[in-house]
Image (cartoon, rainbow over all chains, first blue to last red; front, top):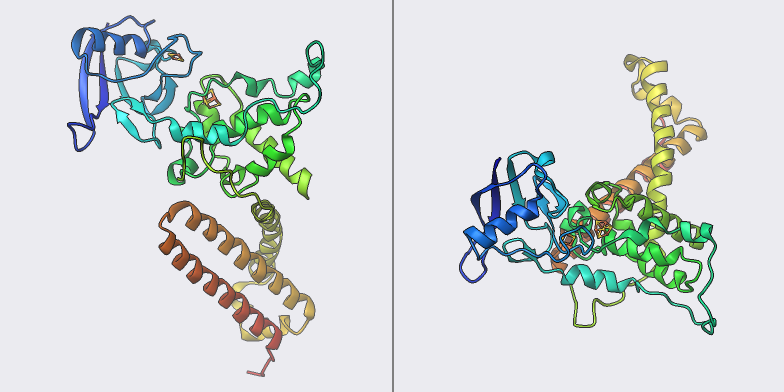
Length: 232
Length: 128
Ligand code: SF4
Ligand code: FES
């Protein structure tokens, strides 16, 4: 079938403003938006800028706004989207070129929550043991691939870029509730700040957007509750 | 946002936002109870026609109703102004304008609370 892609383009060296451009490509219903973007870049317009790496929904490189919703281009099928598809860069992050946004503010927020295991005990000779129940406590938030679909779908983040954003909170959650980690208090402290979890107004856009099906809003609420129980 | 190669600065932690968040939830629920009670008494038990100066004056003859109204006043003013404070934080990014907006907000909020409390505490019914 023929599909039409309406793509928001922007080249900071040439354009003063972003503009829309339409492309027509031959595609199967089982093809993904990423396949169509490849068609365009390889055979129609080599200047089209977008990121992708794994092409199989695991690296988190190609989140973009597809038909008004944040999705991974490598997981969005034309069977679900129809034959007229709009593609825009993620909202709330500066556009570098076409569909490529500057992810640095996103990763800066990620780094701010110390997303790594902190444990000051002598490392055991073998692995640090954990019961299946303890592991299950944070299972959902281990699935994050840092695609930024959640954070850039969040209206609170759009208006206030200082908000750490759902993805940073998800990745803090992953360690806060890990029985092997010892820095929960420190992370809760960071997330209790003005730019932390209180900026969340439970809009649920993040949960809707997450291509990994993570219950993002639930994770944020769990962190809010943990802060409340720790301090009140 | 102030970032450098090493990432963004550590956010300032304080309990204030936690208490503000908790207060919004608790005051929301309380206001629901007090406001529904208020509506029920003023508009359902009593028809609107009987609600006049004498009615309110009689009502305020008892400390119970003054306390009720004082609680409503405080909850509404604080809940509302805290909500506006958060909106200002979210939407006004220039430091100068933010200070101006917050100053206006605080003056108005304190004005409302003081004015309202003054009436509530000093009101003396006069026969009309
Ligand atoms: S929580 Fe989901 S949407 Fe957010 S960055 Fe991780 S994988 Fe992407
Ligand atoms: S290209 Fe890796 S997630 Fe889509």
